[in-house]
Length: 215
Image (tube, rainbow, N blue to C red; front, side, top):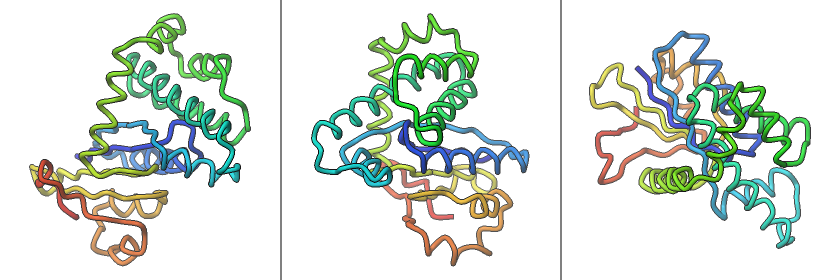
């Protein structure tokens, strides 16, 4: 089994592409998997979003606006996840598409449209968006990212249990291309080691996670 943690900016376009590539690869190979989407925000993630969107890095009002809607989007995703992981992933993909591909502005109307298309129960969803539990879960995600040394998005933590009961893990920083993930899923890691090492890539090792190693 493969367990995937996708650390993403909930309004990020590069994150949208990475999520699609990973999900399509896993579906195509019918790989037994467990997918965990972990939405994040911090000063670096907001700055990266501004850069990728060719927005003014020195516009404080704009920066604060992006920080606000990014955080609210974290809450939105967590609220959606109460109604199932698959629905929450569909909601997130819808939201990222509308903002990055269709250039829609974040709004309650847009959120409710994305929620409806993901077949979420809207009244429950809107109540959950404001709950303390949702905020606490987002804080837990932030702590997890800190423990795993994840600072930017997209970042993908892959834990492979196919050869080691404790799991072999890697952290891939940046966009994950479909070809790379296909080779990982097909267990051809040795054949693409050089390719991986040319990408922003680091070994996942902390005192609390010493069972995770470079594949």
